[in-house]
Image (cartoon, rainbow over all chains, first blue to last red; front, side):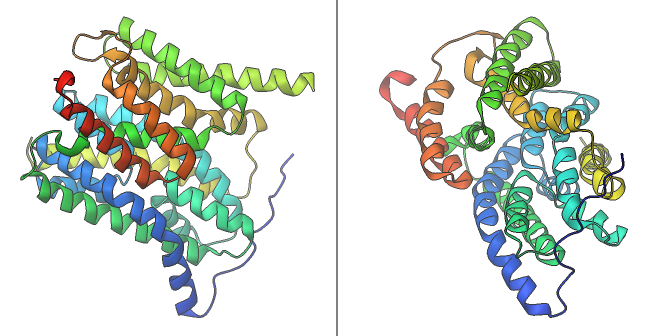
Length: 242
Length: 110
């Protein structure tokens, strides 16, 4: 059963200006959202004594907000490099689903383009591009413009935050709450129906118990995999009863 | 940590971040994932976010013990309400930071 999904609605536009302009307009809310988070991330990094050039290197090589925050927190707590890389893998595994979903709209394109596009898939660029693709007025060039402009905003704001951070005392203006607030907002945007709420509550309960009982950072993987599996069985149970 | 320690760390993080972003686009663009995998993966973001939040909201992280009603949890309530009303990521981050900062300034919270 090899179903081939519908090809993307359009191919790249030939005129240069419209796609860049429309991509830039669509990326504006993302860039605006990245600036405070990027600044906060840069400030935290500089307070954890990570040099400015390392912050730039991290933002360019990783480009993932939550994983970068976690990296800074884990470096500050003295975690090993392998533990940080493993946690990053677990935290960013969610992009697998986003990449699969967006692939439907990018079929038939050159693999070089796809490889560059993959670099810019984040929670926010994915959400914005999928919304536009579903409306039908979107194409790969507009989408990758959103990705790359968001990336630029992220790199610049984290570096600026790192420069600024040397002059700001630790935790000033609630910077130590930026990550938590971002998680809360992203979580809220994800709660599509009761199964998602149930999965979230389960992950909270298991997460607290796992964190209290087992040392280290395994609670992230343990709680999220068990909660998603439980949520999946609830979803199936609901679908079968209908 | 020197240049190579940082480079190794960030290149490793970058690689494990890039592969899940890249693999489905590169290979699965013309195939369909099995429904069970799509369903399961769709629950992963919520589960990960809650797993990350759990100790922040409900435990004392220095003593690694259960704690109910800590400032992180109390500030989370109005922050969530703001997110519900505005649907704004950047705005929610700013409001959360602001409220947490103000809480720290209160006389009884020292």
